[in-house]
View: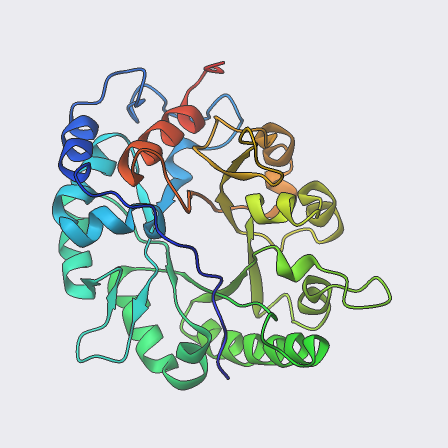
Length: 311
């Protein structure tokens, strides 16, 4: 079963990668908050050691200089990285172009953890043994996929089939000590008829013992869903958050991406329900980071980890 991933045109970053690496490695206190200084809970009430970044945010820099990029984001405080962009069909599995053995080496060198991996729906259905091997190699206890019904003739059937795939794969992964999670975009919240959305189907037709959810806060808000309401109605089902901010740009009718802490999403309101949600990790993400992925990551981390509200 082939699952589509909503694709976005990557922002051109030519000429800024080297400068970004240098800037992040020599970050000022205004840009980055050290883990020591922000030990314990941040001003948002979340544990600083559970903040991370999604590899998609730094994908361009990883492609240019994986070692330097990972050094840069860990220097500014990041302790957890969720690698995505999987290629599990080659002789050596890789994520964002970084082979699994390299990820292991970098994790040991720079002291970060890899608690989650982003894989494809086809990986779960066709290569689940490789998924398990990759997760075990880097120490991941979560793997997540994303989907979307844009190309489906029957969206309701699509989500029911997807729920069945998640449940089956989740039961297999559970035996290996790994939890499968579903990551949303905005399409999952569209009304498919009678007030039912694709997300409703996934929640209703998956066993909470087998399937968890990685709630992308940006897409939930942009998709006119209510993260607070989702959490309150489905306690314990959201161990992973994609912490992504939104902003309105002059001349545009729709919101777009923002560095975490520089947009309008009320993270405090959402994070107040972290215990109810069952959150384990808060992964910073920006689909189109400005001026680049490293800078956006470090600025977002500084905001999330600060013991006092930077504003």
